[in-house]
Length: 192
Image 1 (cartoon, one colour):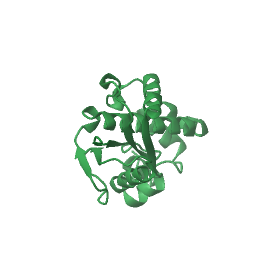
Image 2 (cartoon, helix red, strand yellow):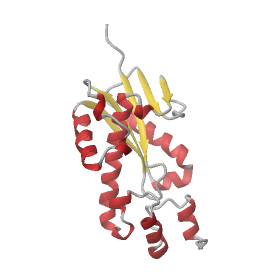
Image 3 (cartoon, helix red, strand yellow):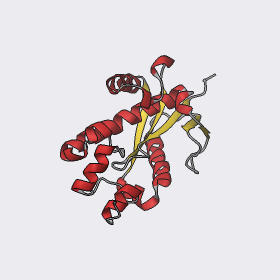
């Protein structure tokens, strides 16, 4: 009898002021040691890249993205669910159940279960978290080469002091989320 196949889903980039929200879905092909699978935010960048490569080589995975325009149009919550749906649609291996980090799953995703702090408890969710984080970080590093003044190579689009100061000095790009208050305030000159 075939054992159940589980897919983990996690997203990254919800709180950023710039760049897309990214979701990843992972079905592990073989057992990966738990010590490598932690909350992606707690793993140093260079280690995260190595671990993500190992995960990609030993899993079926897919990435889904929701653009800045979609975040501004639908809101971050709905854009996140959209990125999850896109990742699931691209996954080649169909699991018996989707395990999703957090409290919400896309409404039309059958056989799904949400798990609070799932990235700290469930291997396939941890793996999805790491792959998604590396994908988004590398995306923002590449984008940062075009816009070095925002220091996206270091802050990855999050609202750090350097990023906020650059927004005030250089203004808003097409990659900034205009629906987010700090960006919106700069657009409409509500900065003190």
